[in-house]
Image 1 (tube, helix red, strand yellow):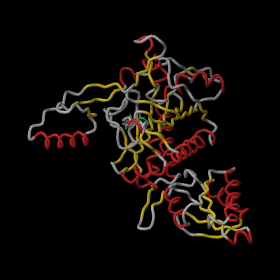
Image 2 (cartoon, rainbow, N blue to C red):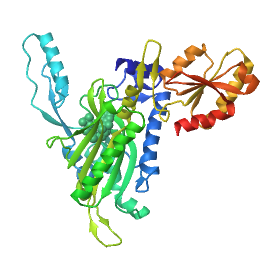
Image 3 (cartoon, protein in one colour):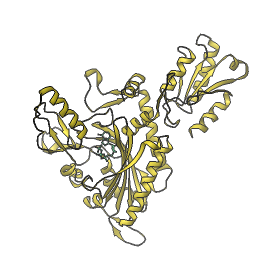
Image 4 (cartoon, rainbow, N blue to C red):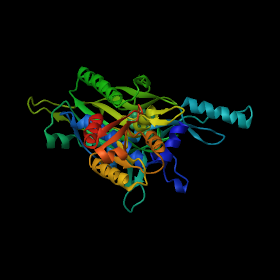
Length: 429
Ligand code: ATP
């Protein structure tokens, strides 16, 4: 983990939030490469969940909603974690985080001798983040930053049905920020207080069997998506929630977990929310053909953009005595191609390389690098996952060919300049 965190900072993937003011716990900023990687993940998700299906449409709802939404959804009463407090140092812990509690207890025993004062009784702690709007302080102007993006899909259910005439079964997809007053942010971006979610709310007939059928389908589809983008299947698994663990809205839930350096950890949940949300918002669906009116059930796939980004980074990290490489899927890599002149002090090579760089930039994110020697440039591109490096040398000036070097195999071959585009496009499509 230390290596990943250091690489993220050094190469511009992820920085601590507000760092020049000492940072702020639970907030992170994405740098020039991080924003590309995160955008690529979101783009691929949108492509597979919206563009490549005819039963899903997208929305982008506001972060701040009428507070009544959060009362109806159950979040004001039930969006809580249980916390205990250490009576020595007053640090707070989530009761379900036994590992951290045990480590803290051992630390305190070491510091204070044999006696360890008990934890306080568990208390419910609401995770919604409050904000105030307008000039009046107090209850009247109190609003919440959304704790999940989900409700934005439900409050627009009727608008979407009326404006698109889409028919059940169908889904509403959304990507956006969510905020939680997490008790113990940590493990880098894994548990943050501001994060992004990518979610599908899929509405089905109000039958147990139909909901189960879609639940199984969506589970398989979401797992397939991560594997298709190169995540190691052996590090992925489903974990079913026990009855006592289920969220207040869920009839059934399974997490997709990744084997992170800090243990198996959830980064997407597939939930059967039954008719909880639509009935709480008093929303129905009318089948125009049969005239039947009912409250649809909802199957949800709720993925974390930041946790996916982190796990794609961890999963692609590879090192040996020679180099560090991020073996990111070319679709996710921040830069697709790097272009170098063999020698930076030969204007004819630089000019040619710049022209190739400019032409390729019209099609995908390309970078030009003329610093240091070729070996160092390859090393620098490997470390950020650039799948292809193009070098312009003296032979280029004679016959318009360049070398293309493949990140994962380190093999090089010569190709014609006018073949680069289709070569790279084929590899990233
Ligand atoms: P956890 O048990 O880890 O707190 P959760 O079960 O509360 O997570 P959900 O409410 O199901 O999480 O949210 C769906 C997804 O949103 C999670 O799988 C995760 O990827 C992401 N997510 C939730 N909380 C956070 C957070 N604090 N920081 C980053 N991502 C988060």
